[in-house]
Image (cartoon, rainbow, N blue to C red; front, top):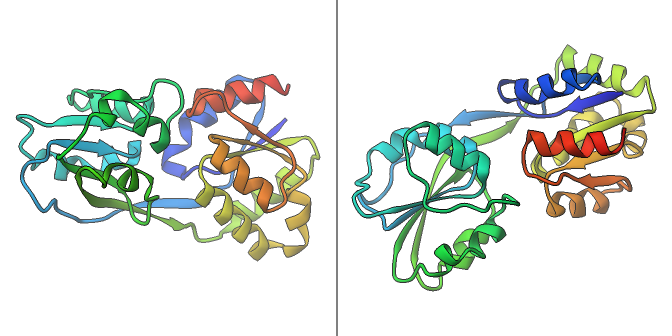
Length: 242
């Protein structure tokens, strides 16, 4: 079965390997590329820092190393982000064990207890406001935007991959964010507007209910949410439809 992989090329290899090992055919269709942004915190010390993604860790390490960590807490939005921090030697105080999301993080007792704190959120440019809205009533919340996602330039890889994927009606598209999906659809429309409706007939495997809601709003009727917000979760969902 063809599996369309839409992650950035520099992040797709682990999922590609899982797909290959499962006996399916991975087809690369990168929609976004990640680029570093230069930013600096306004303060030297914060009572808590929060990382919204593994990308935020990768691109925020320099800014993080400039902070005084003597009394602060470190929170991560999910297991993959927490592991990335741990790999770089930082102790993570809490993160959602099951579903990676801002809502899950806000629901944790350790986060609910934050009051009258200075909080720094590491994120990508133009991220959601959920965490700031949830924490801002009782705390001073600041963002540092350490990366941005931009649409990939359409090249021969995209055209060949789309043709290969559409050559078989039995296929799955993996989607990791709302922006990932909206960008994919914009790119497909630029490549061949005549296949836009056809692509919506394929099964999507997505990482969250929020992505599913968006996918259904633009015309996808077959959408499955992965049981875990990770490459392994995507693979589990794919195995269930084999």
